[in-house]
Length: 214
Image 1 (tube, rainbow, N blue to C red):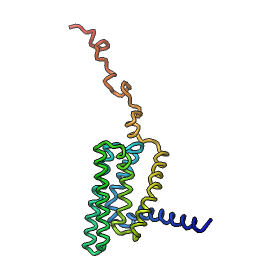
Image 2: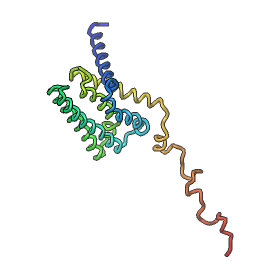
Image 3: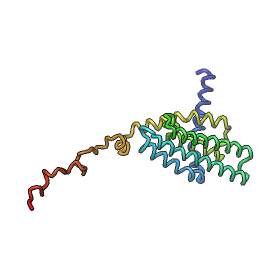
Image 4: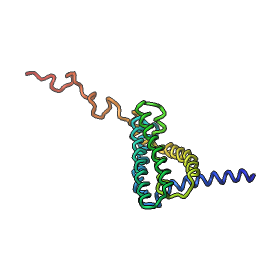
């Protein structure tokens, strides 16, 4: 293999490893892990039970609230870290700029959802929203000593791997009852032996009391 190709592949592999380390970083910090546990849980349940095949506009707008809240918490945490001399003024500026950018992204999802734009189905998907929160939070907490440029490239490069790995896992798993019910294929049909009003004859012809005379 030519040295140039080998160097490119090694660099790409290093970026992917950086993305993986960002993903795993919360497990090395209990404070950070405690903050994003709700994001983990919401992603695992919502992605499989609600958004396995489709993300509704309502779900997308609700998911945007996660990034809105996360961006506010990043700002609060950054100010606390700066006050405690944990981060420098440059780190504070970078963190707040990132928080504002992500907040605007969440607001944009809400706006697009209210307008009913098709783009909302993708940019507001719980998988996308969770990825942003989980990958940026370690940078705000200063868990990864990497350059901003390398972090951005790693996050972009790692995204397709994360997204389509989830897609593959969910494709291999059977559809949950919640998805089948939403598609109208859960087996509960009108007129079946499920206690519907169609089981009762209201015409009086089959009523046991129809032959009684007073």
